[in-house]
Amino acid sequence: MRPLLLSLALSALVAPSAALAQSSPSPAPFRPVPGARDAVTHHAIVLGGKRIAYTARAGTLLLRDAENEPTASVFYVAYTADRADAKRRPVTFLWNGGPGSSSIWLHMGSFGPVRVPVPKDGSLPGPRPRLVDNASSLLDTSDLVFVDAVGTGWSTIVARGKTADYYGIDEDAKAFAQFIERWATKNARWESPKFLLGESYGTTRAANVVNRLQDDGMAVNGVVLLSSALDYNFLPIGQGPGNDYVYAGYLPTEAAVAWYHHRAVGASPDLARFVAQARAFAAGPYLHALAQGDLLDDASRTAIVRQLHAFTGLSEAYVRAADLRIDPNKFRQELLRDEGRTIGRYDGRYSGTSTDTNAAYSDYDPSDTMTSAAYVAAFNHYAHDVLHYKDDRPYDVLDFSVNRAWKYQRENDSNAPTVVADLKSAIVKNPSLHVLSANGYYDLATGFYSTEYLLGHMGLDAAQRARLHYAYYPSGHMVYLNADSLVAFKADLVRFYATAAAAR
Image (cartoon, rainbow, N blue to C red; front, side, top):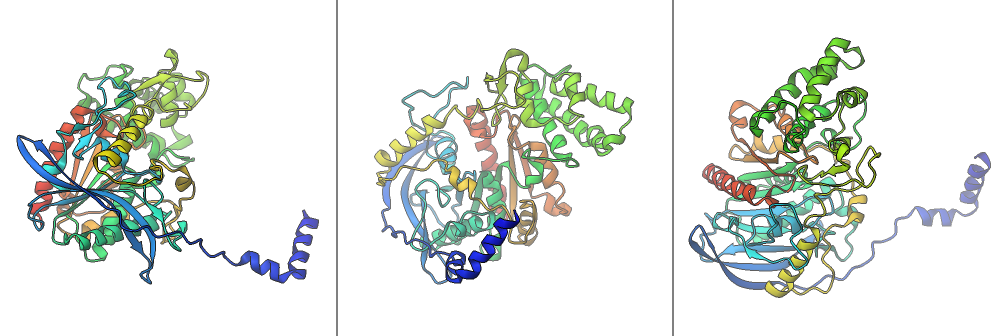
């Protein structure tokens, strides 16, 4: 080791110009700035017996740096009702997460004017997916703008822009805030009631963006957090000794999944009631036992083992061997191990044949393969042949290079990615802001009880807490894939919008 270090030091001394050249950052490559290529089409849809004529605009909007030079081109699709009063008509900005995901899932599956129907039995939509008018579209309540993050979809870095300008928690949030402000300026919508709807990592983005918009002087009426990821300490991604909140936070979800697969012992036939019991156990006896760590006495340990067995359906031997700490990712492989099956991460209702029945973890997600191909095919047809948007580049549905390059460290040097303080700041500073937390009972990616815990520990007063709303559905991470849940979600949103818009 020493000779290598010495040789490197000598090289630097005899070749200072080379060392200097290596330490100097290379200038960012210049990428052409695309010209405006907006495609505008006109359509109509019947919602609740009322015909709504609307305009669809598929296009791009340039983001600029402090010198007003373009650095990125953001692709979006906006749906606006014709002849509506822009000052009173809400507008909602929607995005998925990743990071590295386009907005295709929300666009093709949730509240847009068209959607890809998914069979209720969870089977694939088929090799030739069909698009149908979306009876649960939110267009009767709000205009809609689906936005692709830089590096996804058809959004791209241009001119002298750099990935470091956009691939990070705060960098990304700045970009989305700038997009919303520029879009509102371009379309004269600053006075409109404004809503944000983010899913998964998109909730990380939404909590950050709403606070930035507030600081920029743009008040937001409502934020919808779908399947929240607000603090990465509460997600099952490498939890270590001492971080027991992950296990308590995911227990109610594991109980719901066990209930669905008829593995819970002595469970109430009512899901909501059973989940409430699991919540109470997680918040009380379970968390108290975990907090005692190695000092937990044998009698108490045995009692907790039996209760965990009843709630999760896992054997007492497994629970004891796991030291009472059930890893949500291992739970997916363990619950139906005796059947040789593994369950979904995004939706625990779905199961598939395990590729290795002896493995601790599943190497795939049965619920993740359900819609991907159908959505991609449907969107490409829709964008090119219905919206008439022309772009020869492939639509980048999910870019893992963006995900791998992501900077999770915050501007405030926080070690763990968390945006809870950002959300609290926005709620405190804007007394008209309402927040809806929407959750799927069977979502093993982002547990609903962890979200409840975080939102319940923001230090809000009673009036501020009254502006937090919660909704739950018998579905998974992508709540809207379940047709019945989509209908219920739409109804909850209509009520939420009425409350939030009235608070202006």
